[in-house]
Image 1 (cartoon, each protein chain N blue to C red):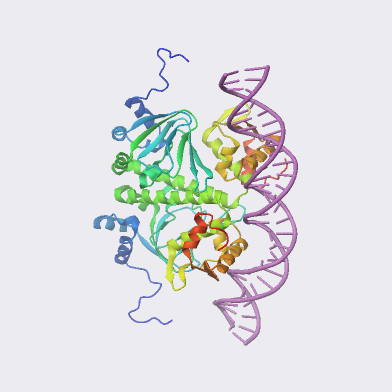
Image 2 (cartoon, rainbow over the protein chains, first blue to last red):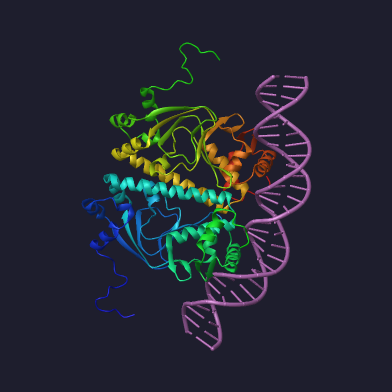
Length: 249
Length: 249
DNA sequence: GCTCTTCCTTGCTCCAGGGCAAGCCGGCTC
DNA sequence: GAGCCGGCTTGCCCTGGAGCAAGGAAGAGC
């Protein structure tokens, strides 16, 4: 792929001005006025991540607060006995690694790019200063943390009370909501998502996920390809997730 | 029980001055100076809760932010299909119902006093104003939310990857850390805690919890009575929780 | 095209733990 | 003391889903 004149070098980093534009579009910062946004820019540095690259590793000291601008990351954790757990996928506009940075703990998980990505990062102290000096930012952050907490709690409740099939349905619906893209056949989850990935999100095995998806595919609810899932009848999936949807169609 | 002169009426409410003293001792507010504490007092009202009384009900609009001063509460949720889940126990110094109040959602759970309790409550708007006007408070709140989030996430991971026995061990250790009291035989979990309660915390049944505790009792790790648990060998329990502790002693 | 790798499927076995029934125990009220 | 009630225990059965093995299919690299 030759470099074409006038075309932006794919791996080049955005200018301060461009960063400013990106940040202005992020919900966490939407309440800031022009001058506050300028202050926020102090210490903001862009970071490019190739697919497969890690934004940070589990156990590392959390020195940075980051926000994803483009791409997709997977936040996952390895337990003491070696099991892999996926905590969440991160899509543009979301902060990541922020909680560890805010409370001074090491990162509890690793963040891996699953698509070419671009993030903006601040050193921990710089971002802490911003939070302390920009009340509108800290208020937003409180809202964001509340939301995250509620989500984590819901997932806990689901794990505690629901069976695998239902958890798969919920995971897919959540992902569709987050990264779904309308395509001809239905809603495509716009993320490389293998059976194993799904299994790690809901605490089961790739085998069980495979069986569930095969069943749904037979019944026309989804189309499941290689690391690729399309929801053909999201509404039916909602029935599976929410209620006893009568196991046969 | 006759009322004795000079003794405080048990159901009387504390004065503003006493509330001030209580709040000053709470971690969330420890960074506030004298004048900030005075401002915080605006809108703060004491609430007494008898054992069995609810501080709020799941589904209610979250109109208040509360902090527990004395006693113990149980935060629990009923799922759509009627299963009971216990999210956590609340001990003095902890906020509760706060997250719903901060992000304007209805309470996702009910808070029930399991011992005579005293709380301080603010109307949502009043507390929001305090948070927005007291940067030191909002910083603390961010820290508290981060911690809560991390805890919820850990519990999720445990549910996703660990078997029942280990989850019971973790739940007991967590409770011991939170409400443990040294007694002659070991560490007493200072809370009425039935098998059913434990089951609801970790997503299993009272039967399974009973079997696990009976086994541990035989092995001398715990002493389990009627709604009452004493850890005789907390260290052994840590081994169960953390690692493969060799199933026989 | 062929090969290698990775992901996916499916059949079989096995077991942790859920569900239920029966009965026990300890503390309460009358 | 008698009876009751709520919590606890234990035995039995049964199933959801884990674990494993063998083989198939879709890309990726040559």
